[in-house]
Length: 316
Image (tube, rainbow, N blue to C red; front, side):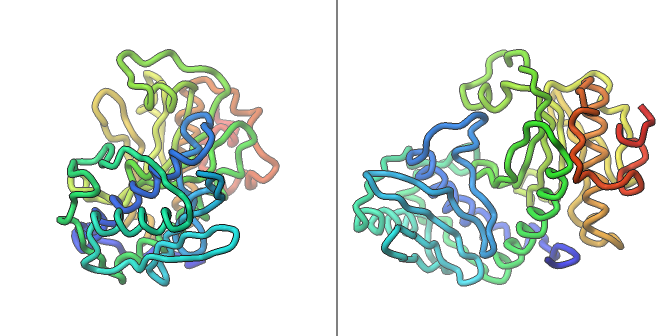
């Protein structure tokens, strides 16, 4: 793994990111229709692999298959037990073109998946079949995005291993296009007033979440983040590490944030990100009165590698 994630200025790949995001939503919706439900919607998320990211093993119309974004050879790979086919990812391939090519390929394999073929949770609203506007694909930018995903996935997985409680996989959420992992106290959370079914299931239990998003048109500054739900009243009084990290308001709640570039340009990017993740966990666990002493894994590093303000340091 590289010692630092690559430079990835949002403005330089904004159009490509929108196209790739919409392609990914199509694949994510196929997974949604082809997997058994799991708590917190973990059955619909994607997983980072050595070439990019992929679905889990899917089953539809009696066929086991997997869809993978190979961002090194630039193709969407469709694998079954007996076949491997691919759609080349290229500049000029619109969302509409991708949608119809994938639909035809799956039909050839005996798979006919019905999805709600329109974007979810993004500003773009054109149905996939009609979207000829989004058709940008910058191979170099996509390769840097892949490298950033793999680097971040590895650091998140290390931090996840420090926790003995219930924790999510490190997973790519296709609706928001962020890579995230979450820890749970084991206690249910109060129902959220007016929450839709997706949100209600996602936040049914107390959670401290960690993630990375590459930026979007509303928030172009790529950043790592963490939040605690339900948010304790004194969360933002808790210290964060490193000094560049801060608490940022997000409507009625707050996120701990650390700019992607602050990690990328640090003397030790990996340790910098681990310190941020652990300090954000300590902030949420302390202020929400989690039983965090019960959650320390034997893989958790020695005291010297954990931020001084964390529960493990004995300062609480």
